[in-house]
Length: 208
Picture 1 (cartoon, helix red, strand yellow):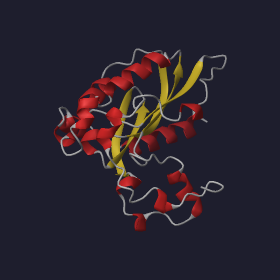
Picture 2: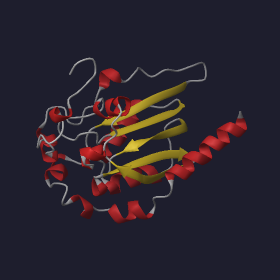
Picture 3: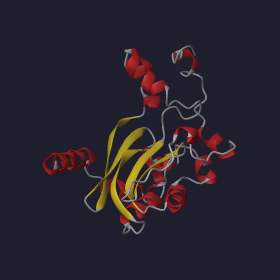
Picture 4: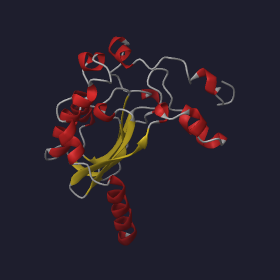
């Protein structure tokens, strides 16, 4: 890599997409790119912005349980980001917190599962892809932002980590993941997160 330029041949077609190897990889459940995550910032109102980052997929049943239960960790003001669900592991999912509930939808596919001939050709967008590329799972990831007052981020980290696949579930492989408990229920409760995001943005414009 020279000046941020990465040869596509070095990350594509390597045969390294071996998800079960995550279970054996040291620190697979640690926060990814922890050095890139700024420390939580609080202003005089105690507002905290925190990012959850991981490189393992979520279990649909455990994630649904987390998203459906009442929020009791401080006051959540906003949440938005992309997540990786095991039962639809090729698809990019979008999560937003609108009003008092979470909403989610599937908004496309991870670049890892798109033929490189269909990738963007301009340097700016290619750099955006390669900057978040992992040698095992490509760009598949959890990247969720939580903004709120008096958030216990350590507790939130533990709750979200619990939603990830276990080493044994990862070892079962992607072919088994669509049959994970809760997959159909999770999909049935998906709504247009993009619509929720647009509504949220419109409300911000009105408030301003």
